[in-house]
Image (cartoon, rainbow, N blue to C red; front, side, top):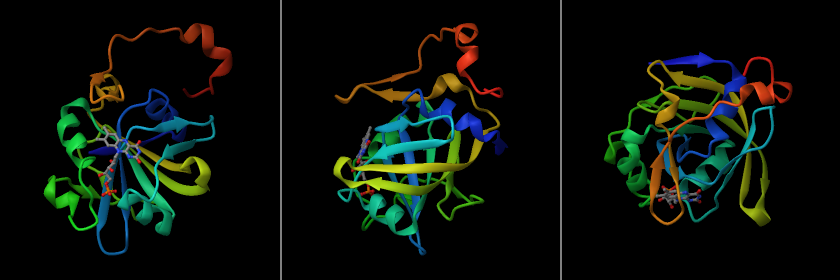
Length: 181
Ligand SMILES: Cc1cc2nc3c(=O)[nH]c(=O)nc-3n(C[C@H](O)[C@H](O)[C@H](O)COP(=O)(O)O)c2cc1C
């Protein structure tokens, strides 16, 4: 279902700012929250998510110091928004939303089946004043059926858009890009 790809490809999933699902494991069960505030920080696979203890999954990922950032396709949009509308403190959202958890290889947090990509991450810093959790991506898995155009983005007011028309200015940027991107 997923294939491991070059770690540098992590950037291609976070830079466009898609709505993501972030999973974590507490030793007994899996947890998941919807996160649209993500930031690509550099070409060294460091990314940030903005969240805090108002979310149960944040507490779990800060204790375990790891998580998976999954990029759902637009076909999962309604489910992803519903996942972001209830707390998993008492409810097993994997069961409630029929999510299939698959084993990751560097973290205990699960990959999420049906997503276009899953990034295995370790927590490397926490800028508490800004609610920023800094993550190091350890491994990138892409769906064998991935079409990059199918991620979706939040406008911030309850409206969302799927990726639109793409423009290719690669030639102008080649001097800035790592060789395998
Ligand atoms: C579209 C969408 C985007 C969201 N983005 C964020 C975000 O970037 N940061 C955040 O802290 N919460 C965000 N949320 C809210 C959490 O997903 C929500 O509080 C969730 O219920 C937390 O679940 P948990 O308590 O089981 O971890 C978002 C919710 C939705 C629907």
